[in-house]
Each structure stands twice: as structure tokens, then as C-alpha cells.
Image 1: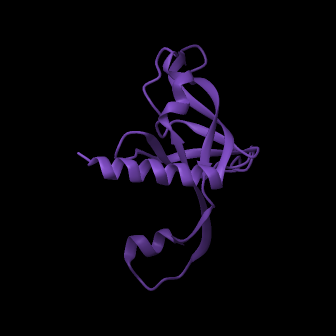
Image 2 (image 1 turned 180 degrees about the horizontal axis):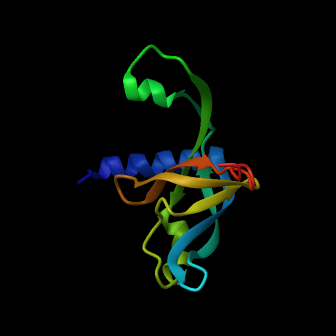
Length: 152
């Protein structure tokens, strides 16, 4: 349980971040799944809401992709590559998501949801609540463009 001073510090920090990094984003929350037995597909039921959120600057993380032969045998490294993964931290106050509370099936944000920031779609990778349950802290990853992974 947090003390009153810690709650005040979290609220003040969120307020300061909101003044500096606030943007309007569209949040698409998955509220259920409809199964189409005839076509053999699952269609997610999604509800959209526009909210003011704290969108922090992007974080570039260098990742290394290992070759399967290296992982399987442990020999000297032969193939692989470096790539940069871009993730964007987003903080959304729970009070701003009140429009979703009336939607049947909505239980809170999860990794099945996504958002659109400045016309670019981001998938939620990690969703957690702040210590005082006043906001969601979400780590997002930019979704691949349509048709980008068709050759896989």
C-alpha cells in the first residue's frame, strides 16, 4: 500500500508529463472474438475511443538476430544481423477511458489492443498499471505496414 505522499508524487509526475508530452490518440480495445466456423477464422470485436495520452519519446533498442545454426550447435557465430527495434512508451489515465466502461465485454487494456499515434498503428506489447491504479503504462511497438510480411 502506498502512502499518501507517494500517491501525490505519482499524480504530480503524471500531471507534469501530461503538460509536456500530451497527444490525442485512438485506442482500439478488443472486447471479444467472433468465430466464423464457415470460413474458419476468428474476427476480433473492437471498440475505439479517442483519448489524451502521454506519449513519451521513442526508445531505440538494438537487437541481435542469431542464425538458427548458431543456436542449435553453439559453434562460432556465422550469420546474423543487427536491427533496431523502436518502442514508444504511452501512459493513459484510467479516468480517460471511462467511455469504454459502458461497453459490454471490456475488462481493461491488454496486449490484444492497439492504438494509432500520428497516423501510425502501434501494438501494445506490455501493459501495466501504476502503483496507485490511476493510469496504464504501456510499451508499444510499431505494427508492420500492410503487405510487409506477405512473403513469410
